[in-house]
Length: 537
Image (cartoon, rainbow, N blue to C red; front, side, top):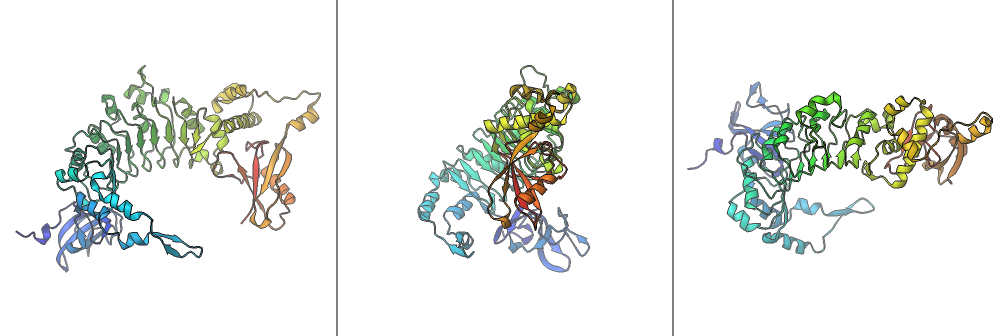
């Protein structure tokens, strides 16, 4: 019996535009539209590029997620997708499309496209088309909505270890479970940009799966918790871009789960409270947490009285347990961290050596934050900072520079020093730095000599041409404004104003010196410093 037009698609079915498998949406309505003949399908498009919110001429047919993400299309303009095996044939045995061929080019010196042919491409394609030898398959945005017959899948790709299904039309977790059972060699699975059902049911234990990528799927932590029992061997879990703000079921870790998890990627979410992350502190195998681009304002290490509720709730006082006991890498770039106490708390994490703090107010000197050398000095064990290795030389120079900066700014009040600069006394002793207090008899010339620093000036202004390096001895109290006047004179900058930058070892970008009232000692500039002189645009 032939299927009627109104039965061609079902509500909440995932579809893509016919002829464009990257334009994906969800069916929200099937039926007539007033004033327009025939059957129409109301679709809420993932990319938000529709025409309305699900209503036309005052009549509401469905509710789209935004004001312009919905549209009505004819049945023949949509595709309900293909099977996994069909996707394999399209990707690895089909002819290359014109779009793919157009992508194979280089730009000439005149900025024109020169199309290229890859040598040996035919051999690579031949190898990829032998499915029984295939170890990794990448099938993104092919409109795959179903698996097909399990026995045919296992016979066709028996040795597959890695599978990328990004941006397809999968929606049922049962299909994911069946796929992994059908392919016992599968260890890496990427389901990003597939909109899965909220309820996780029918999932067997996936003992072989080691890496699962669930980025940009609108998945909640509640769903993650439902998946926990099915992922006994998972080592990497990627959950980027899911608008997660809470770890609702942190207490469930007491009962086990994610025992093998080494890397948890929560980048580009909406987590604002560090206590949510503390709920993960009992994951004893956890080595890396990626939290870039969240909304965190503060960090602490569990153990303070101020967070006793959290400690009691998660039994962190257990003698055999240390919170985050194996955490080696913590990425916190692009958050809202403002206080130095948060930075200092990172020293309490037992094995933490790789830290990212870029794009936070506390590390942005333009917003009152501290420069790289201060971070290195305050973080006792950091080996990699903001993706750049901290060498032995950089650590020594940073710590000495930091101690001298603190000595120039603060009183001898030991309590104040301990509160504001927890590592100051330790570093002062490590590097044998004595208090600089010249005697009365020699106060004049000795004080002047000890207050001079030797800095290197390097002109990089395009209009000035190449200039030799200049080394100048200046009082540590010299302000940035006075240094700019000196540079104007040294480099004969008559028609333009200088713009100064401090070049620091290990820092990818030099630090702009834009406060004319700050002194060299205020900025931590010492005799190893290089000042770059550019010109105002």
